[in-house]
Image (tube, rainbow, N blue to C red; front, side):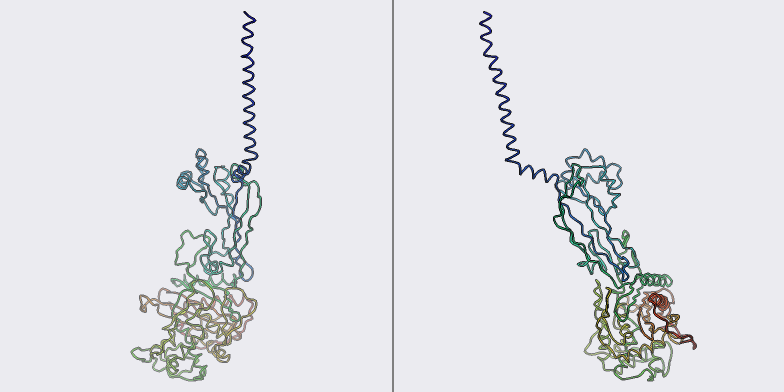
Length: 573
């Protein structure tokens, strides 16, 4: 019976082994099939999936061009900064690790959570931009999944507010918003590139694979601005605005031969490196954008027209008695009755009656035509954003009162840079050259606006304005002969002239024997009784011009005692 039992169990034993062998055979077949599927059939797909989880295409930031002054000193440079960003889809898969951000001073954990959840379907959003590398490292070291870094560039302005109105600034995307940064955006901005990198599981770049598209840096720009003179003009203008409690002001310094702007400053100013509490009113480059009636600084151009037409010579006399002139319904007044004076004294004493009589003796279109030649009522083509063309009325018929007002600077509007260009014509022997904010190697071709002899006569006549018998003795510069003209105008407020709001002006050139530099100073709405151009603008001109001439090593041309003696002038115009 036992032998029979063993015979019965034997087939069961064999069946078990056959089952085990069959099972493992099937498993082996399945594994083989899966291996073939993975290694052969799905190889390309899986390789691609692995790559997209480890390979990244990242932007290569382009370095923005450097802005320099004429001596090569940097006015705007780009420094590398780090931008933190997050992939919300990836971050949502690791919410348990967001707690690593707790207590971090750069990225608030709660704000991070809200931002990620709000944009959970996206793959890229900014967290913080423009961080110092050390600051960004404090976040990256936390190894929060989905948080990455990009290298970008941030603009820095070494001269700060001193050159802010000329240089301007960029936004967070490194795009020009004001000034030269905006005007020359196409030159300064580069083109971003792309590169392929490998990241580890924590998102850190462990290898650069290849550059797909190289970044193209922007072009450097060299300005005509001399930073030494810019600092000087800024300091003196600020001092004048503060001293007279004025609302603002501008100063422009030109090289009369090349048309280069050597300095251009305004008040109020702003710091382009810190625009957190910026007053938008301070952004304007007032020297280029703001218009005003030029007042008595226009009288030399009225005299220039009369000289060019052969109506008068510097010694021709004109009767200004009794110090008033009735034209239509308006009475034109001088500060006092100067009686019979020559044309030179008309400028020396700034006689409204004298210039009005000259204008009324001309053809009605003559004076506007000459003013247009000097560049009034048209752009200087300085290629600066927001430049104002000014206003010079061109009428088929002029009323006598309009012609008279035009002769002493009312009824037209100019900018500080336009006024400077016009005085540069006088200083440059009657030749008008285009203005520029970029450094030039050779003086540009100019246009003869008035005769050389006329221009030189005007310079000699304007020297008397800066003498002790003129209205601008405070504009004198020790060691140099100066020629120029004061101006004081009522401001236009609510469509009419204000009784107690003025603009004080001085426009001048030096050295008068061989003019090199023109400087215009505008003081907007000085407070109190000291508002005349000879009082508020002329002293600032003197200090600016003195520093400019010495910085440029221009030889002195003033003999001892020249222009000395005689009663003091009135400092009024």
